[in-house]
Image: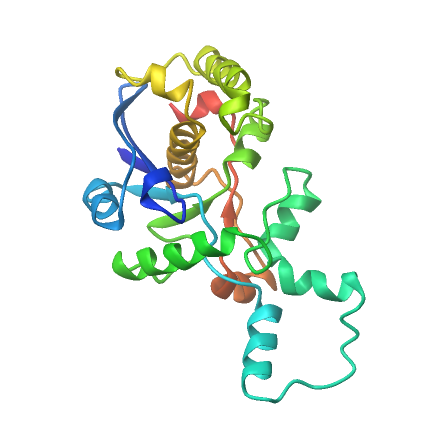
Length: 242
């Protein structure tokens, strides 16, 4: 099996792509590319069984409805948007709230934070790849922090040049917990660049999704997440991936 993780940024300069090949109980990091534009991403994901993308796949239903109504001059009065609780459904998707409720992290708001620029790029990439299923398709939405927390690894405080010591320690913890993961010459980069590190974690999440070991929405969530997107979080131990 081949899985690919894309740590998508608004700019290709900070976008990293990790390609992992799985065989005989081992996982080899055969490619770790940065920077990566959309053309390069399409080349690297070709032939993969599953790909993970660290970026939102959609916007909250409530936000879309609000923007459409306002755009057409049909926004009703009395919404009481001076109340922050009334604004939360505009900022956070069903999957974001599920992650927070499970205490696995606090995803950024796709409609109210700078990650919106990443989402613009992501939906264009999904269209280029022909991906229509935003819940459990060939590409799945990933959130590395939630996977790292589930696996008991450092899940925050490792991003940025000033925190490279934390990133290096997090990578060493990953290596200790996953001796079957062969970095294939990329060890140094993984210890100093959080984008590259997140791309690898995203490729591991893609593996969990391919094995059917991530939680999927059910019931009333299905219809909503088909539009908004769904974050895949592993439900297995790290060692079970191999």
